[in-house]
Image 1: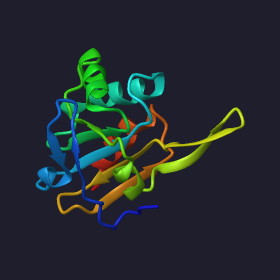
Image 2: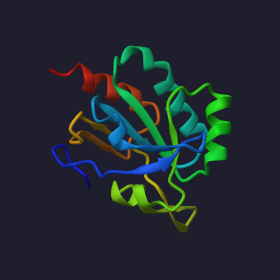
Image 3: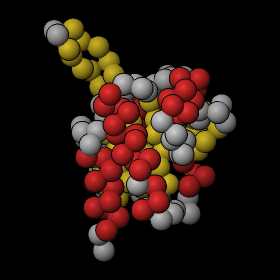
Length: 151
């Protein structure tokens, strides 16, 4: 698992508009990178909308969402819920693996690989300030606000 103090893995992925977005683009400010399993599902919608609703409260801190969904699905999700930040497509799970959130999961006795909902607050220098693995959808926004309020 990635811990506070470690360097955040770099990435470049396509956003919901098909444009390349890299972590380096946000090098002059803090950024919350959160991973969610699937666009337009109840938990992912709750998580994304709670983050959307606090955009005006977090100053220059940026938010980036990442899931295995294709850009077209991300665009539909972003449009449906008026999401003002990039939703990135990690279709080959490369970035999820780098952040250690691509995990074996099980449901109803069936095992499969999927995203472990997680979030990372990264500072201006690319260092992880906070890492929250297995975070609940409703806690992501609250944890971000708490972390930004720390001295």
